[in-house]
Image 1 (cartoon, rainbow, N blue to C red):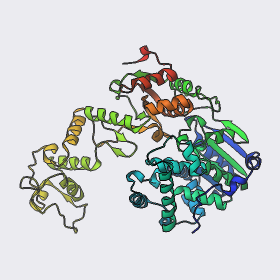
Image 2: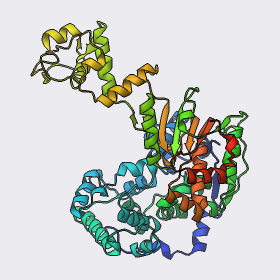
Image 3: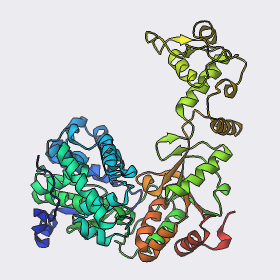
Image 4: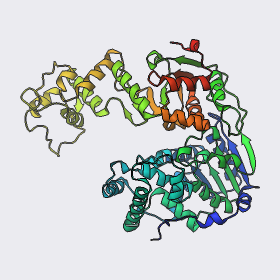
Length: 548
């Protein structure tokens, strides 16, 4: 196994700037897509044009930043064109392209268990780095500060000592600890013949073995790292048509190595999509007030929708109206801020979805409650539902008789049962007149209190939550009718704003532009100083503008 070198530079770095420029100059169209301007639709129209010209689907490369975006492109392409998913062979991420080109197997890719084992070897608890994070976000989310530096070095294609000198993340152990972790990490992968996602791209770039495709499309290019850009350069060298799409104003991954300047400076034709189908007029005005403060950017002329929309300022999330039609995004710069939002929702009995993953009430708990409520109404439930419900009832003469929580494997989950069946044959002794929170006595008390508050508020615990709490980074690519944007900044974020305001303004611009109808700007009550300064500097906030 020829594994990545511990040293840079790579051979491609010897290629001159002018030569690289020649790869793009006469065959590249850069498409700047402000929020909601139909960038994906435009790119699929380009795919359609080249299909009509006679190119086969497998001759077109559509490289998205995340697996989710790549899958969305495939879904939309197969619904639009008379082809199957397998026909669009090169609709994938750059990492996935490298995986395919290097003929790797899933067994050769670092997985969670390997990171856990490596963490134990290094005696580092927070070493975990999942491939799913990279697939979902396009970037590694390392918690360990040394690993963050290592990942940045690889993304920036520099040696770790160079990245160390640039980093503000200096921690106990210093550079010798960084070297120890780096050497152990490399040795572990070599010993077990494993690759992480960056290894794939590094080896691909070293070998120069990219597919020869007449048409390539690069989406969300503002988020690409230098390593990813070198893969794009190799693709550009042999192609006939290049389309590079993105929005530098939404470049929010610079902390992870993204280089939006590459998008801004790409040679060739430039095109700006100038009509948003999402952003209403008042929200547009706020967004532009932030964007115009970004010093290094490509200025874009674009228009909002004909809707006026609404922009309101609040001193606390407690005053935000969550009774409007449509979905809500509650967005903040960090998860720490959102923890306080969750506490408020729990206290008030408001159901929500956490970070696009889990509902605030466990689906299994909801299922158990539904099953019990059906039983007391005299209705049937499935045996699978009964099995789940039993997990929330204690053993005992007034609950479930001893031994009945172990089910006969021969009993299929789809068998229907009633309260009488369970009482007579399966040890259920809970009186059927009890309410769910009395019968299901193993549900955590805090959870019970929260659910009962939700019920008293008239919320349907089985419905898909209309409120999602997300970091601004996690909301990228999404949209909602109503966006609640918390302005709270940590001291670190505010210091970053003072040093390089562009990065922080891009983050909040991205949050603002998730809005389809109503934008609610909320000042933090805890870090008042920083959030107030940020609001005043970027949203022209006057005290009288607060709705509450």
